[in-house]
Image (cartoon, rainbow over all chains, first blue to last red; front, top):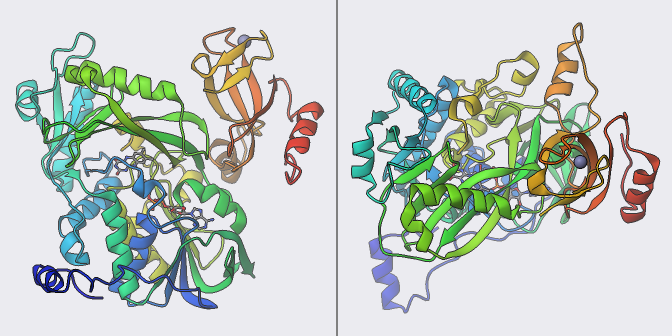
Length: 415
Length: 107
Ligand SMILES: Cc1cc2nc3c(=O)[nH]c(=O)nc-3n(C[C@H](O)[C@H](O)[C@H](O)COP(=O)(O)OP(=O)(O)OC[C@H]3O[C@@H](n4cnc5c(N)ncnc54)[C@H](O)[C@@H]3O)c2cc1C
Ligand SMILES: [Zn+2]
């Protein structure tokens, strides 16, 4: 892999930019690998990357039914934060957020991590109490957050209407080192680094069956034939239920559509991320000037990557109240992704009933921020066969034993 | 927008009138059941990409709970039926089989 640098740009300028190489190879699958990862989204690619970097396991294939980063990783609104209430969540999301701080340097690929600050508005007294509690919990967890006043909210985000008729802003939970990143670049950066380590990323290769013998996976059936493997990692987000069925077990997961939309590009007017969970909408401004907007999921099982229009209406209705200037904007594009929602709305990083098969899923509406930390923890689980302290609380057994990590009650909404 | 016919009041209800209620025909477990049975009842879901049986409530209409058979991959609705049953009725099964010859059946 040729490194990207200022010097490389100068060198390529001299040769009319003919010398740039492909960012990753497109190999044919080998008959077998030490580890096969299903799903080349951010979490699958990061898992492979840290398998190589932290554990020296490089005979790895990542199988992707579409194109890499074409699932939720390329469809999200890129909010990165770690201001969770429960200790296991704060630990893994903060690990992830801190890895984002240096990810561009680590991967030699600009992921445009922008720690512009994330603000979660408190618009009811219940929310004020909840976020004060989170701020105290974060202080104990070593996550830097602060509960700020309405005046400070207005100072940080002047286009916000803090005196709304229904839900005036009573304060906010502010995480100054939260922010956004470029979602595609995260997938591309990890893919390039994996390929450089000799790993095979095989796109247009759908897994259609999981072969096992005596309680152990021996390989997978794919649209490109059988591929043998020593260990299997399932990292397919919305399709987790489907692949788990191939492997013969059931998950506490349901797949639903979550939508997002962007406005026409306008001049810079907002340099923080604002989430308004009571009215159910959130917004940031992209570097191109579009307002990037999201809301809640549809309520029913869905694999179609498109959602119902009334949810867009609801989200915009909520946001127009919070940001009156939005009412003059045209919306440009809208899309959906299939999110994997677990029973307690927290993710799963776990062993499975098959000894050498591991699963990472359930990140639902909020796993972009978790990509580096989740990959780190999943790689350790696959390499050692046992979870690290970072992953231990996220095992599937918690649903049987009632050890929930109940962030949905804590946050009221995901992301 | 989804349109489902409420089997009680006969209205072709729009999605905004309805509240989704998740997988149908779950076997309910009570006191004395094992942890595994509670887990299966409360959390484990089929979540298929394809034919799905699910609960809906005609929340802004007659208020009744009913069941629907729907394809999660195409949003095609195969039919709706009253909730007082432990499995999908034969006419719904026949309709699904006609439309999805590969379907493995209700299990
Ligand atoms: C609209 C929207 C907004 C969001 N906003 C945010 C946000 O602001 N902040 C945040 O942190 N998170 C957000 N999320 C959530 C975040 O996008 C996801 O949690 C995260 O991207 C999941 O990554 P992943 O790698 O697990 O899944 P994906 O990126 O979906 O990757 C899974 C891959 O597996 C592949 N696959 C599936 N089945 C098979 C098979 N049988 N064989 C081979 N390959 C297969 C898929 O094609 C896919 O590429 C949002 C999600 C959506 C949809
Ligand atoms: Zn009715």
